[in-house]
Image 1: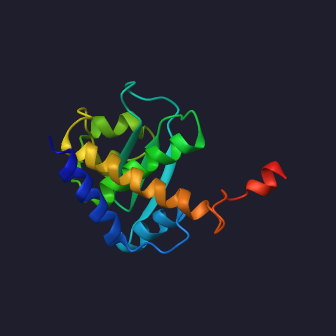
Image 2: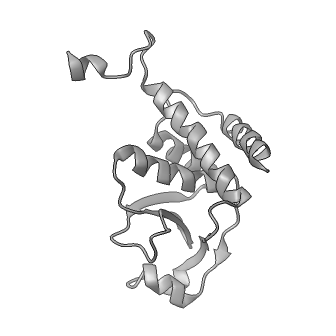
Length: 161
C-alpha cells in the first residue's frame, strides 16, 4: 500500500513550509496566502450536494475559496479546512469546471469567474490519503502551539482554576 510513502510526503511537505511558532489555522492560511499571492476565503456550506462532501476548494479568478460542511465541533471544522489547505500545499491539481457546475455553488456569481475546483469522489486514493496525513501533521503543530512549556494544555488554568 502507498500509506508509508504518503506519510513521508506529508511530513516532508510540512517541514518545507517552515511555519513559525505558534502555529494556528489562521497562521497557516496567512502563510499560504503570502506564498500564492492569492486571498483564501473560508465559508461554511448551508447544505452539501452529497453526504460525501466535507470540504471543497474552488479557484476563482482572484482568490481561493474553501467551503466546509457543518462540523460537529471546532476541531472537526479545523480538520476539514486543513485538509483543503493540504491539497494546496501538495499542489494537487484542480480541474476546470463547467458553468453549470459553478452555478450549483455560486448562483449569484458570474460563472466565468469560477475557474477550477478540486473534486474527488474516491477518498481512499493516494492524493486524499496524503492530504489527510498532512492535515494531521498541521493539526498536531497547532495543538503543540497551544501547550504551555510546563506541558499543561493552553488555558488549562483559565478553564479549571
